[in-house]
Image (spheres, rainbow, N blue to C red):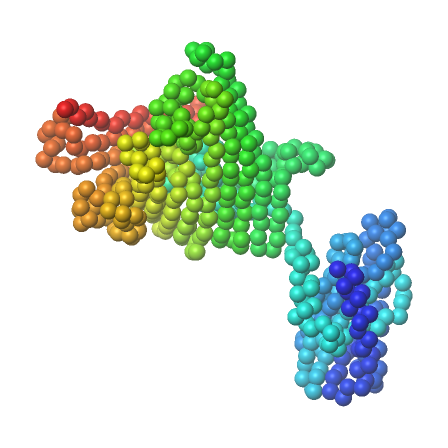
Length: 552
């Protein structure tokens, strides 16, 4: 950039000193120049500018230590109020740029320039020699540069301005619309804080976004406790920082590698050991305060306990692939007795208003306060979804639309998996400081008659059971559910779920012999800081689902 600035100054031969020939223009005027004849005003302005720089500019110690000799090119402006503003600084060291901005920020206001009697702004360039000397300097009036327009100069400075906007990285994720990756062990860290008596939190619809949890749990303070003292770049990146972290005025993003190696032993299996080897990367960031993005890719090879391997192969999809790893996806054979299974997750998260969050992505969701869920579980493979969270008063309302695949061989069509769709409503209501009630409705349908995603179910507040009846009872399967949570005190919570399918009042008398009225229920209890041991959480849970047999 320096060569361009120097070339620009060489090309421009007409400087501001020549303004004495203009009868319409008057340069900015310092107070000690008010009685100077108009032909000398520009000279007086130039002298005052450099005198201020010479008296206030402090060459940074780093530049003195390195015995640097050169110059700094400054483009600045005096606006219509007489205020000095730095437009661009070209220098080898950031410390010199910072010092120039400091010196110009302490200029006093002066009389602005005028044109034809009206106030106007003036832009100038000035070189500052390093080491600093009491030199004779003539500022260059940028308005006289016919070769390069104002817009062109702004365009040329745009790339460097982006660098100037960079700031010290702060982890903006902790107050963002990003999801907190859902694992029960991680969520237990702040579960108690969100379930204190008197909080207006809603803990069933997961994953949470950082913004809603940060009111109860200070992520930055907890992060500080994990930092390690290190002076090396490798140490900082390994323990304290992201591999790549960048933050500007209204944006930020990070990039991190992911490595996970696990080794175990199944004494009942005919192989030597179990293992899981994962490599991947994670990208996340934000644009402004309301929009965030996340993406991760994992490549894994593994061999599990024998009962897990057998279960994974029992889920096998049609085709040559031998297994589906629960919660991850289709796996191909690796070596002779292991599996290779890639996984990718990504989503966009946007909050158009303080009470609404919209997410679109490829991942998993969960509804419930238990370890498992009868309403919406995270044991499926990652899948496309659209989610709308609305929170106001004592209500949180979650709508989730999902695109799934039925991989059973008997429904294969043209060597493609059968597409299924699910739409969910979940209403969470904090009845009191202690009691929460949730109402759930879900409908699942296939691509019958090539109808694809049925627009009837896009309405976020309609009753799915009524739509199922209107479109034909064979067009979908609606399920009803409910949940409850009671805070006994700040340490003990009770929770439950109930789900009902194929409800028929006339068949209730059929009892266990009727295939209708299929139901399931869950009851559980959480005990935080159990037995007065900090961070010890005990959880007991019982789940039961009524099944039925069809005999031919």
